[in-house]
Length: 156
Image (tube, rainbow, N blue to C red; front, top):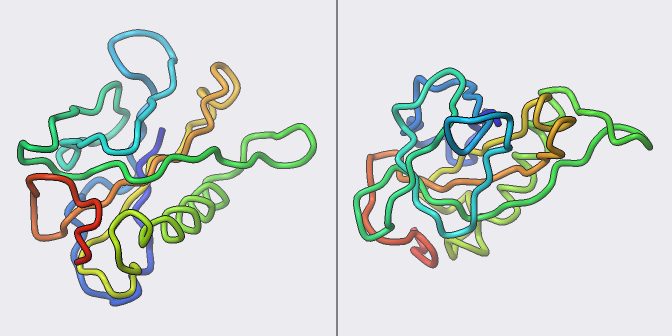
């Protein structure tokens, strides 16, 4: 998977807490093979220090300080009848649209009214074909730093 940060923030406010990551690849959940990285809504992550290709994203209990929280997971749409791997721009666009649309349902306010921000993990070419890993995972975070507890219904 690749971590994508939206390029446009409606309020133009925050410096991304995940700054310095740029695009981050995440391809498996542990030390082995090409299993796609898979998240569940409500999981909390310590991912702000990750760079390059990622084989594992540290998950923590949400009652502990953490960098981000998964709030939406959905499948990317491939190109054409054969569902070929979309290019990076298309994946980023799908991620931005899906994550922005789901933001208010989780946080409790529209992204344009929130001080929180989001980023997304998108699938890599290898996981798309080898393991049918097509999930886009959206994470919400506070640009001011770590949070403790869930951001669900935080309305901020």
